[in-house]
Amino acid sequence: MARALSLPKAWPGAASAAVSLSFDVDTDAAWRGFNGDGIAERLALMSQMRYGAVRGVPRVLAALAATDVRATFFVPGATALAYPDLVRRILSEGHEVGHHGHHHLAPHKISVAQQREEIERGLEALTPLIGAAPVGYRAPFAEITPETLALLVEHGIGYDSSCMGDDRPYVEEAGASAILELPIEWRLDDAPFMLKTEDDGSLDHAGDVLRQWSEEIDQAADERRSTTIVMHPEIIGRGARVVHLETLIREARERHALWLAPLAEVAAHLRDEGIEP
Ligand SMILES: [Zn+2]
Image (cartoon, rainbow, N blue to C red):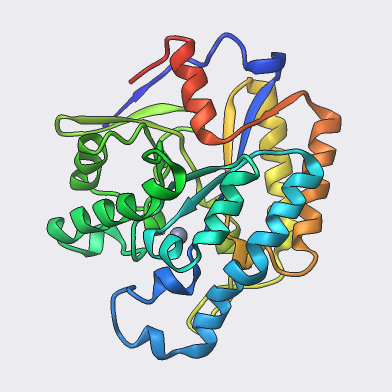
């Protein structure tokens, strides 16, 4: 179930829309625990994921610095343990680090005990690096269950960004649990358009997805709402794609006054405006 929330009377800086760029830093380290089945032996697939840590994140950070944008990076605990300096660099450049499981296990495919372990090990890995518990959560594979929602509430997570029930902040509910949802949507995710592995996926739709994101920002500005774009450093951080992202940001700013902010700041702004779950 879900509950709608009103939009804030204003966004900071009198912006017409709040736009959050978010990056899921999955990496080889997180995927090693992914459902077993010998995935760690697949060196090429692991290297494709490792690229995100080696080259993707630095490219993305450079693009964000060049456009003066602060964003949200959802980091699995195993990624944080394998690449702590990368997480420190993300934080030192002013970005938010959120929770993205530990071994990137899909909540709906594991037991409740495993779900608890994913949440708690992720918190244990991220909290010392951040210096506080992460404020937000995005589920691996963008799927949560009623048990996930209860675990998030139990562990004091302030918002979730995995569900798709509205195109503006709302409350996602299951049983007695409720959480502020900063929603996403497959159309606003780089993976369905641009991720190709041996198993599945497609390539060369960069133009399509960038046009869709640009149109999404236009419509968000028309409706004075917020929107969230989902990216992966191993995908958007390849070659010239990150240049296209920079162009998208610059052109959108020429058309609209935008508040480009990490999701935690959007959540804090809603709270300041008295809009709470
Ligand atoms: Zn992920």
